[in-house]
Length: 238
Ligand SMILES: [Zn+2]
Image 1 (cartoon, helix red, strand yellow):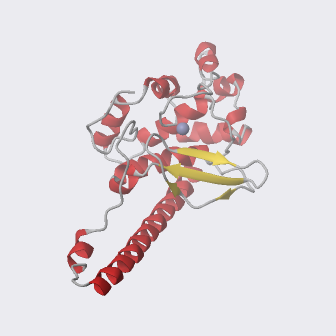
Image 2 (cartoon, rainbow, N blue to C red; image 1 turned 135 degrees about the vertical axis):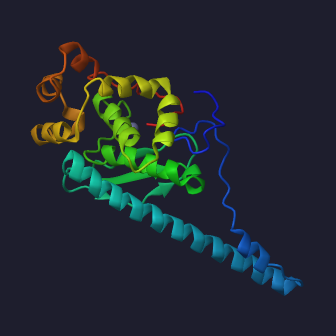
Image 3 (cartoon, helix red, strand yellow; image 1 turned 120 degrees about the horizontal axis):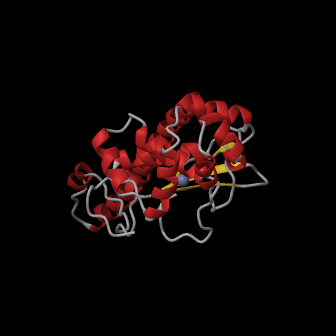
C-alpha cells in the first residue's frame, strides 16, 4: 500500500502518523495559569479534561455503531445470537479489525485512532466492521465473499457522500480490491444477501452453491469468491 496523503479521510490509512490526542483550543486558553500550585492543578485539570474528552468520544463511537449495526441487520439479516459486542476500541494506525473470543463469545471492534479526527472514516470503518459482526469468526483469512460484502456495503451505502465513497473505492488496497470487485460482479441486492443469510447465517460458512443459488452467479465467479485473504497479511485494513 502506498502512502496516502489525500483524501484526508480515506478509510484505508496505511502509514498514517500516530494520532496524538490534543485538547480542544478552548481548554488551552483557559489553562493559562501562573505559579507552581496553579501549574499542578492545571496539569490535573488537563488530565481530567482529556479523560472526559476521550470518554465522550468513546460514547459517540458506540452510539454510532449501535445505529449502524441495527441498520446492517435490517438490510442484511439478523446477527448471530449470543454474541456480546464490547465497547469499541480506538487504537492503532494501520487497519481496523473485529475479533471475537471463542470462549466468552465477546466481540471486539477496533477502529484506527485517525477516526477521531476524521468522522467519515469512522463511519466507513464502523459500517465495514458491522458486516463482520453479523457472524464473527476469529480468523484472519476472511472469505472473499465476506470481505467483498463488507467493502461493498461500506462503499455503496449512502450514509457517506458519494465523492468520499468514490475516492475510497479508487484507493482500495489491491488485496481488498480483488474480493470487492468479485463481489460487485454479483450485482447484489440487500434482499439477495438477506435471503442467503436465511439459508446460511454464518458468512464464513457460505458455499459456492449458495452464491449461485441466490445471485444466479456463474460457477467461476462463485468459486473465486470462495478464496480467502492471506493469513499473514501486511498492514492493511480488513
Ligand atoms: Zn473486513
